[in-house]
Image 1 (cartoon, rainbow, N blue to C red):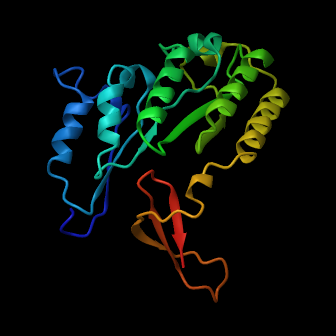
Image 2: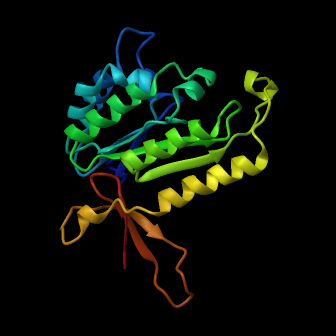
Length: 227
């Protein structure tokens, strides 16, 4: 693929962190084998992993995410900042364990980009529960935050539970979006010169007379747009 000009390889699955648990290996072992044959300038991006499966590999993953052929980026969905809601979701971890994942990666991987997901209005979620979610986002100021409103999926237990009023769900979603829009996560790039991997063109110029722009990513997988 690299010989064909590919610059980014995405390793993805339903839950990348769970790789190898059924065959006696692990995600870090897989990544190290891939890195060993990744020629420059190609970069590897690791896909989504749920907190329980990354928790036992924090030291190894920090080392791997610091490798020059691996983007310092990881998508770790949390869904809620409340242990009560996480329990109802059967998420199999505590918010304190999610804190441990975030704190370790942010401490050991310079300019680490952490992406996460939040569901607003899951059945049983109260205003105090949602306030805990707001405090979580305020604490980490995630540069990538996927916000969604609860939607009952047929066949799930939660689909049978009493819904949070629609107005409250929208209010919480708006509040979380407003918080996300209130902070900046790229200030550390000001006056800095960094390497950018150019992956292609943005072929949708703002105006017809504008030329296409180049799209790329930094080592931390921050998107960069260049004339």
